[in-house]
Length: 115
Image (tube, rainbow, N blue to C red; front, side, top):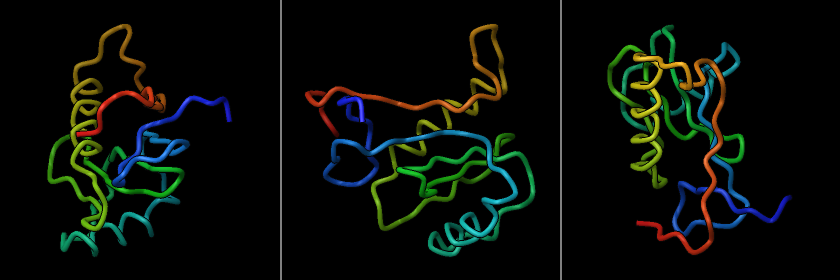
């Protein structure tokens, strides 16, 4: 660990939690079905989907071309879903610096408020 905390989707945030936003892969299918079941949502379709993982555990997902997000209702995921929506917008309207196709990791300072 490099000593820099990362954002957490659970309350309260803990140093060391890491948020990764990336495109879903076929191996994510069981976790996506579990998220949909927890969220009382229909099973996700096989379309391009962004996922957010906290320390490797999927917590939220959003179809890239629009549609309803699914998220773990037993964890704090509002901010994570908002980040997925922002990243989806970036990918739909690519710019030279959009980083299309790469995972992103979000870091924050310990003193940053968690609201």
